[in-house]
Picture: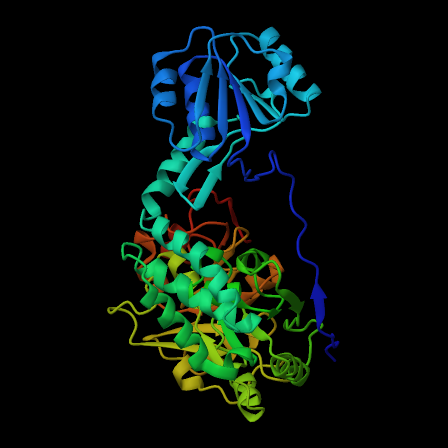
Length: 512
């Protein structure tokens, strides 16, 4: 008898240690002081002025760069004082920056600033800094700061260059429009859900039309579309989302958007924890674990929870490993939502078979060796091998077969397929945790795969792939996988054993 489990809310992961706390300081109209006349001091003065600070620079010998910046200050005024700083200069300052030639001068400046209660930065001397300047991507009011805590400034600059190339400059206009429209949206009479819907429409349009100049007609259109939805925007809904086999980079864009707009996420044990990192931090995350032969929530309990949350206006994401429409019991959940009058949709995901094939570098439908691709379940409702499998199809040598949830039944399935005519030497591969960092690949023949799987006793989701494509494609796919490989003896299954041999980041041993 399988133990039952009740849905349980998971606590959000705690923030890991930060080398620096990224904060954005408002300095418009406030006083900042800079000590030093070098080019580095000039750049910091320009940066402070760009945010609107009134910058006083103390330099006995200001560089040409500093003089030029002061003459054309980007925003706040820059005043150059041709002398050294003194303690009184820190009065009413909000921030202090210095370019010092040696540690003694740096310590003197930092001590004076701190005594006056002013946060201090000494350029290129982190030991004397209360804060750090990072590399900046400026699409103001959209601003991105990048810091390596002084460990690798060149690396930070390289990341900045990547982001500069990725983020269209047209985002400046859209971000500025968002600032102008925010008050109008707040006073529009829309509910909280309606306002969020407005900004979702705004964002989707801005991301796809970054070079278009935002206009009042755009605002009116977003508002009209939001109001056109009417009460439905405040009603709950359910979205079944495929989380893929494990690698978070295999999530679809639509899946990410669903996770980022969810109020509640109901997820299974088989969902990789990294997937939840894409969700809104405010979203409630509830484990409704369903694992073969382990404690599981009952399906009708999951359905009832899903519907009750949607009925009180929550946007519910039912997050499932792989693709929800392939052995994910999506049909039952969709039917339950429809019967309750709850809007429901499905976002497909990459199923485990696709993920495993991509890592193996093998086409599941190689035209010379496969005429059909079939997905079968090795796990019926009672936990046993289904009694109504099509054994003639399973014995077809021209078919590629993927068996889901086969951990306890692959031995019986293999034996019965062989008895119906499947060659016992047909290549078979068990993949544990497909696409995950701890992925395990066990290569054997269909006659031996069950024994190999029992010997390995793996923990994690398993699929078994059977077919001649795994021998035919082997010679060309040896570099397409990662994780650990447990091979069949070379003389028994040499092409696939060659395929599994020592790609990068894999430890290889014989499963004998």
